[in-house]
Amino acid sequence: MSDPVIISGGGPAGLMLAHELGLWGIESIVLERHATRDGGRSVGQALNTTAAELLDQRGLLDGIREHTAPSQGTHFSLLWLDSTPLEDRHLPALLLGQEYLERELEHRAVKRGADLRPGHELTGFTQDESGITVTVRSADGEYRLRGSYLIGADGENSVVRELAGIGFPGSSQPNCGLVADVEIDFGALEEIHRGARFCPIGGLYSSVPVEPGVTRVITVEFDTDLPGASVAPTAAELRAGVERLNEQPFPDVPVRWIRRYGGPSRVADRFQDERVLLVGDSAHTFYPLAGLRINLCLQDAVNLGWKLAGDLLGWAPPELLDTYTAERRPAAVRAASATDTQLALIHPVKRVAPVRELVTTLLEFPDVNRYLLELSTELDVSYAQPDAARPLGRRLPHVALTGPGGTSSVPEVQHHGRGVFLDLTGSNAGTGTTTDAGAGTAAAGRLAPWSDRVEVVVAEPVADIDARAVLLRPDGHVAWAGEPDDEMLTGALRQWFGSPRR
Image (cartoon, rainbow, N blue to C red; front, side, top):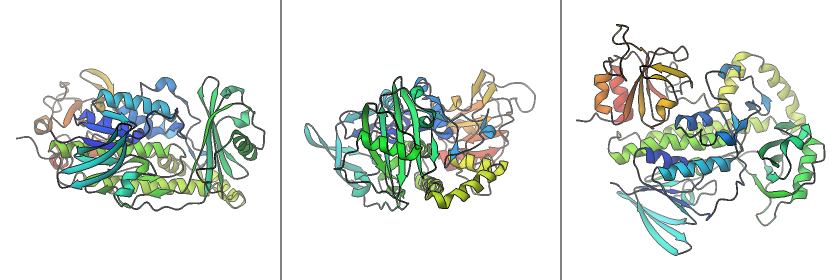
């Protein structure tokens, strides 16, 4: 066995990656500098469609569903979009406090074998051709670890990224936000203080229920830089900010905790430096609008996990790991740009008011609405060439599948984290007889040498999937689509899953 993968940072990206590696039997050590979790003091409060589907794809959504609530929907710069095109094909967005997500990911990662070390902080590393040596500081003193790779999942102020000498440029209009949990029931608030809204003076406000009697309140105002860390936010500052934004007083109720957030959008120059890779906020950061930020963190982890596992298990083709940066950095640039565009439609209010009015009119056109709907949910992310026909490169709809063993679904067949060959002919060589789990299908013989990496699933044709067969990568994106006996399938298997077993 190879040395473990060392992950610096126990937030959503780091924990999701540890879980993904565990699905392949890869050992990981997660270093988290905080000795205890900070009680959910995170601005994260939503899962957009793709984030919810990624969790469902691994069977992780069930463990947190009781803590979710319906979202108002999907918006672009707080201009609400018509979600009808996604109904019955994709999951809706959900409200969820990030602390519940982290708790579930931690539980599942540890269950898969991850070695989680709270109160252990990375302070340095050296790398060579065969691995990486990490220096760690803990309450018991300093020690060293040997690993195969080091993953920087330690947030926007990443020590790993800084030590690796990776640039983190960025720019956007100055903004300063507050996030706090206040002791009042969500339903007891005046209507203007419930939910998410664009504020006519130029800014954003949102509130969501956290638990009975507790509401999370988030504000952001522009042309205001973050003050120094020594300037602590106060409950009075929060109430004053809400009153400016909503033009109504906010109740003087106890505040459990409060903190500031904000700053420019940033994307790392590169996501890899030899045996060091970046995921999540270490690689990109921007205003957490419409759930794009947490979505990107989870997508990074799911994209990298199987590629890193393939490298360590010896079956990955030489260029597979390089596709992580090639695929995820453009997605991060696009998401940051989409977020900055939304912020540009918010402030300065006098200048953007006619633009918002125009965009509202444009949303009445179905193609415009659908374009912004897919952009805001990241359902538009494709890893195929721009002119490739759907579904190549994209995620499949989250729809039901009917096969020999009964009914399942697109996410259910991906729980194990392997590739999936989905044969949607539902019959044996056109005879009309149903096959048993792929046995006897036209492609089954060719897929056998990859059976440790790709599972075969046979199902009846699905109207929402425009192909008779698809090869799904472990991250849920379509690597190939065509006829089950298409000779091009072998090339796709070699490209994404390496050489066949001998």
